[in-house]
Amino acid sequence: MGHPIRQTPKGDAPSARRGGRRGGHRGVRGGHHPYANASSSTAGTQSTMSTVAALTRPTLDAERLPARADVMDVKRLYSTTAGEEPQTFGSLGKTLDPTLLQALDKMGFEYMSPVQQKVLTQLPTLTSDCLVQAKTGTGKTAAFLLPSIQNLLQGNAPPRGKVGILVICPTRELALQIAKEADGITACLPRKMECHTAFGGTARASNLSKFLNGNPTILVATPGRLNDLLGEENVREKFSHIKTVVLDEADRMLDQGFAPDIHKVLRNIPSKQTDGWQGMCFSATLPEKVNDVVKCVLYPGYTSLSTIDGNEAPTIDRVPQYSVIVPSMTQMFTTLQALIETEYQQNPQDFKAIVFGTTANGVALLYDVYKKALPRFRMYELHSRMNQNARTRTTNEFKAATSGILFASDVVGRGMDFPNVGLVIQLGLPSAAEQYIHRVGRTARAGKDGRAVTVLYSNEAFFVHTNPSLPIKPYPEDLSSKAAQYQSVINEAFTQVEDESKAKAYSAFLGYNKTFAKKLQLSLPNLVAVANEYSRTMGCPEPPLIEKRTIGKMGLKGVPGLNIGSRREN
Ligand SMILES: Nc1ncnc2c1ncn2[C@@H]1O[C@H](COP(=O)(O)OP(=O)(O)OP(=O)(O)O)[C@@H](O)[C@H]1O
Image (cartoon, rainbow, N blue to C red; front, side, top):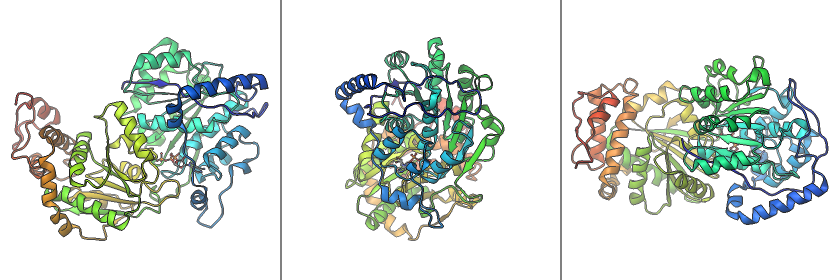
């Protein structure tokens, strides 16, 4: 990964709580904290400086200001099924600093969500280690930021220039989103608490220098760039007074893909055993196996909190979930078109949807074709083949959009909060139930309603049967005849899509499905036959060329039906 450590500008606010409680049940360093005790003259100076900073960086400030929540919806949402009203943050008494309460009020956070209430009232202390599970979109971000920030405010702030809270999360987009929420929560402190981000994709040097020369009390980072930076001695020194380490999307951060990176990070910051920092792990999905691996950040005896009943699927109850099973690859694109049209006709007002594809190149192709086939919608694409600027721009645009369709890969499958998405479509086999659940969670957030539809071809249909706890029902309408009517529209759209885009999608399709060939009950020649059917559906007269080396890497050497050759020479 490549990219920035970015400094967060934000405004300062008037009042401060003096002194404050001292927390910590084990060896947390105490000491003066710079946020709650600013004298009025210091606070005044800071305030003026921040105002200047804010004025000179208006765009950045606007980008990072959290939107106000819809209080009425949230009150209904956070009520218990027994009809009990949720508690307000104000009812917590002295648990939270008045400046944090003031900021929450500004953000429109009046009532605690169930996970926030559990964390703030049921943890033995705000610095206790915890493993926390709560459904998607129910406010886990504030649930880990509030106690960790409060801890700094009650006498445990690190010295100036040092990192106090490290949040590690899987994607760049999520890092920015978490940082924005941290900015919101700390917006009313008398003295600015800087939140920096570190993630791949943009200039390293300038951002590193901002981090080193700044005062990054909070750092939100993705593991790759964080490790890259931790290779530098002066960066490691910044972590000498770390108080809290949060793993957001903990099951993802500790799975095979990320775990080595996390372990490397942990080797480069003070040891938990000797330093006693607080560990917090949060996710909507915490499969059993996570319990074996969380010990790298949590002490034995850590507190487990969950807002999900034992056998319940961690998807939001308000989301009706459907599957559409398509008999063959040839109907995939027409069925998606019919589905979008049908859903739109049912809910035309502010139609805002996300369509997840299985691979980045597959998503790019979907975007290319539906831009032509569904011109009435504003289309967006978001995947790892785009540069970071384009990714950030699209993220911000789609967050702000009242309607439109985002074609996305899993870079935004977890954690991302796109307000008012009313429909999530998944096209192709989700790699695991957890991935399915997180994608569904991009809708019905913060009290809003939503629907989710998964479109699978027949060999992929096992996904529904092998995950019986997921409340997926057959789609209430047979879309086949409607789909057939869109054949010419799709064919025409494909004539306008570049061959290169088709070839990349074809290759990605082969690579992705090869890893699931057994589950799909496809022999390798049959897998290639399905991929070739996919390419014919895209209007390719013959299967796109695929390099010998790529075939070898995919483990498809010698499999009949492939068109071996180099696209570059042609
Ligand atoms: N107490 C609250 N009152 C009003 N809105 C809230 C409250 N807490 C969180 N929100 C809003 O709810 C939305 C979802 O919150 P958040 O992104 O933290 O959910 P999450 O549980 O982390 O979701 P995911 O599992 O997808 O990561 C955000 O827009 C957030 O600003």
